[in-house]
Length: 120
Image (cartoon, rainbow, N blue to C red; front, side, top):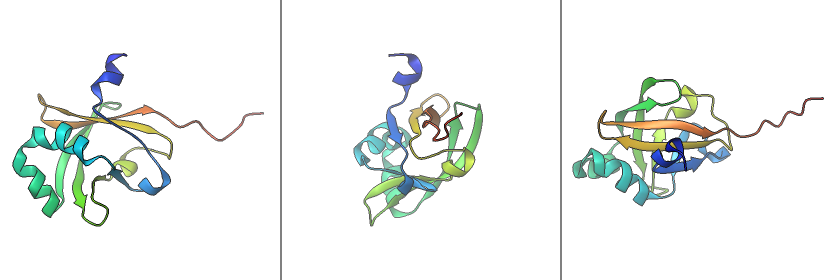
């Protein structure tokens, strides 16, 4: 396993239903690998109201502010705006981890979905 693969504590393959927001099915992963690093008080705060967090884009070296929240209806955490910041598509695999040195969430496109276009 190379370093790029081993860094990413949370991996997600995007689906059509992810359109615009990244919903995470495994709340334990989000709480253990991201929220716990931010502090225990953040878990209860995020469950009450969404917050703005900084996210580092490992692919471009840029930093963005995104919405991080909790959807009570679906019982899932979500991150907003990533689809708009990057040209993401259904089938792309993304990775996330919390960097304790920069104190930011880090993001990368680990695999891009294959194009449906066939060249003749």
